[in-house]
Image 1 (cartoon, rainbow, N blue to C red):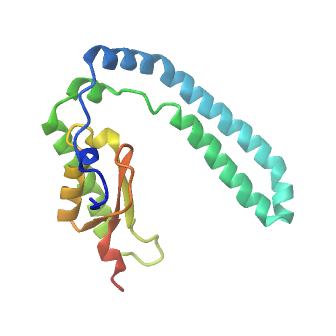
Image 2 (image 1 turned 135 degrees about the horizontal axis):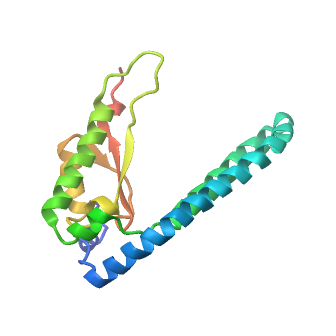
Length: 176
């Protein structure tokens, strides 16, 4: 946590009312198939347009980068429509700090295992950055994520803790 940030933002989120969670979960069950179909339709349209745009991309390198960025923005935008969804574990464990502690421990441990793996020749480097989403730590707060991550060798990156905590693997700065 940085000294200029409000310490209140690093605490756990307030428990949501049960009726609101049940309503959101029911809406999730209805809207998730629609969102998946919408994402698939957008992906197919972008693929078909991309086939024709391939001829232009052969001539213009900037067009190819722009089209890839456009595709990423479109598909990511469709996925962000579902940011209000409530999953079954969230419905069952709202307000259960032990569940969220275990969830944070498991998520940070997973990223630590990936980042600390030895580099294999002719393979991609292990990830050195990660983001822990609010969905994983809402019951214990971003402060707990920072505590666990710092204990495992991660450094904090500038983050909006109302959305995610960004981490960077500090051992990556050492030369192999």
